[in-house]
Each structure stands twice: as structure tokens, then as C-alpha cells.
Length: 207
Image (tube, rainbow, N blue to C red; front, side):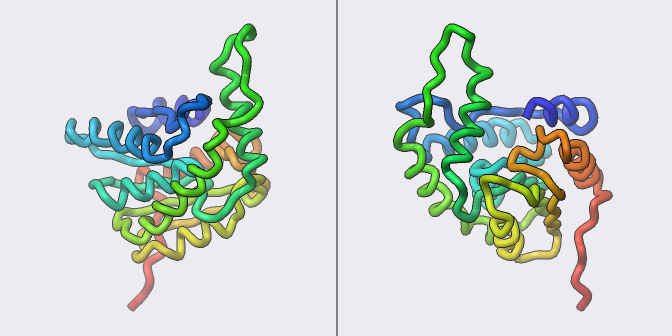
């Protein structure tokens, strides 16, 4: 998310980031992934900060859970993994991302931790329905050419939100990692900027 971090730091707000998991054979407990996210959030809550929470892919499911439990100003879900996904493509993307953390002399493992897949599925299964409890505004963005998560995943998440302070936007030709996709990332940044500054208004149902 380097491109988005650079944009956000310059135009939006201070950004706190962390890794949900590492490319480590021992790091395959999804409850620890959730605990890392929750601890990072609680640290900011203790400082009485206004929090805009962004989650990507599986992180979007976890972010939804946290937003249902804690006071969040606004929630942003990028390519959220509410619905089954292409594990092989996810592995390839994660490995490509992980390579930058290794020097040329380090060995990059050919796969994610062996228990990762089961834990990924269990994480989604346990927390996906928490989106129904989210009461803060929600923006969902996904590429319509996502090679990992089907677009019906975002559609499903959008339909579960029980209020009208929500927007779902698909970016044409966008891949899974839309915040680093040269074709659509600038549009995604502008949409998030508008959302932060209350220019991206939700559709209100007339009574």
C-alpha cells in the first residue's frame, strides 16, 4: 500500500499500518491476526483519536468486525473477501508482496504458511456476518477485473449493511490490489479523499 500511504499522509491524515500476518510457517493462527489488528486499534482509541478504518481483502472482513465493536468514524473496505476467493492467485500476490521484505541473499518460500488457507477461510467464516452490525458510514471499492475476490463479495457486503450511509463503487479494469493498480489507483485515492471530506454522499432512501 505504499502508493496510498504516500497519498494519504500528504492529503488526508496520519496513517498507522501493520501486517496482519508474516510469511512465516508458524504464523497461521487467524485469531492472532485479529488480535494484532484489535491491539493496534485500541492503542489509537486510548489516545482519543478520530479513527477512519481501512481494510483490504481479508483485512476488510476483520475491519468490519472491529467497526462493529468499537467507535469508528468511517469504514473503508477495499476488495473485501466476504465471498470465496481464488487461493492460488492470492498466494501469488502475497508472495510477490512479501519478496520486497527479503534481501537478494534471502530465500523466499514458495508458498504461504501451510495452514494459512484453512485459517483464512475460518477467519472469513467467523467474522463475515459482523458487517451487519456496523453502524458507521461504509465505503466499499473493488475492481471489476479482480482476479482473487469475485465482485459479488462486495455486493453481498453492501447488502448486509443495515443503513443508507454506504456506497459501493466498482472501478473498471481494476485488479485485486487497486491501491497499487496503475489503471485505477488515482481514481481510488480521489474517491477515498471525497469520502473523508464528506463530498462522496450516500444515497438516502426517501420515506
